[in-house]
Length: 483
Length: 147
Image (cartoon, rainbow over all chains, first blue to last red):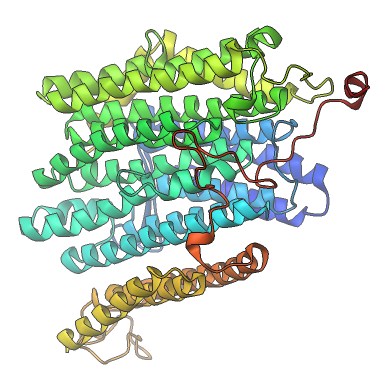
């Protein structure tokens, strides 16, 4: 078990080293990168198997816990590691197509795997300072991915991403210092034991600082300005990976702190988080309604969906935490898939801007089907995966009598439908505005189709048979907040 | 002693936040670096000040003396300093490149990723050169159209 628990870090890091050494040989580099992600995926499946059999992988390095740095992967962490590996594989596969793959820089693949190592480490660790280090690994690698294209708007976006995220990182580090000063611990188990002895006022202040830092990373209202300022400049496969995964690591950290380590936290924090969640949903979807660039519409929908995830945590119950986990898994797949489909639309019609494209339904009806499955799942139309996820969140919200939050969530679903129908009408239904437009005859879209169809199959599998995943999420939530 | 230290942290963090609110790119980077320094000091203070004795295990002993300083925050702050230094180097290079390419160091003029709207209700289209380059339809198809 001890070796398996470090694989979410070790395998991507080994791939970073190997792909960096093969930087002069693109073919070999690509092969190594695929091999690395395959091994990562296999290890993630092993982790989920071990966690589902109630044998979570645990290891402490140097000294026994709580002094050594502990890694601990329970059901929650294992399922998120698996979804990380899946997204990495889909993104790497998509990169082999010619639908906005971005420049083939020799450092691209090492940086991408470095980012996966940061994400995997954040899900695997059971130590607060170690979590900070993984957030930094993620930040550094993502900055590299932003800047690697060196286009002027990408550099501009990199700077905004850097400045605002660095603020969050500083706040995180300061909050970790405060937690350490108050409890003398950094290990999750030891913190959980020590948290009960804190005076309520001190606990509220320290936890508020910590959660605020994670909310910046998650892109919650009103701290999401960095997200729509930067995400749309990334090439499609990176956009799908970064947009699908990174904000969810922030949500995972909030879930881990408020739903597990410090649960039950002071009630004020959950109440504040609920209102932040409602505002995040609403403001995100309104931002999306304004935009006409598909990438920017979808980037604002990331913010909007973060609201639902936070709402599950804010309900402060086992059912709420289970709903957040299920919603995370659903939304990562659907969101990444929509970004990838937008890139195929770009390749076939020539632009990301809805005002300049059209006529896709006549050209590629199959793409319309793929788009509708993911788009309607994002909206939450039964029986697609988004419906089950929203049902779990709202069922718990109604059970707790949270009428305002429920109404806000339902209203946001309608507005989400509006944005998705905007893409459908403009890109698929309407004729191309340029009557002389001819679709490209020479395309290399097979890998792109393979990646999007695979992700759509995952969505359909969750949609048509949600019970195993619901049961898994409930079992995962049942082990949270238990010593 | 702790109040003097707290005051120093307060001054550093305030100066850092003030500078990073500036419109000048280089000042923002300097502000973030100062802010990082302030946060590192805060983290250092979390292990309690007081003991001037270095956290070194004396020769022949197996454990640290009880009067020694707390070694854990020192080790952790060292990690944070290294990470902060790497990010500072990256942001300096990024800012130099950005100033060179965009010919401005004013953040209000840097609207390349988010062009300011020209229409009251609809967002602006991307600026030329600020969108992925389209490979284009196959040339064989273009010929009859241009004729």
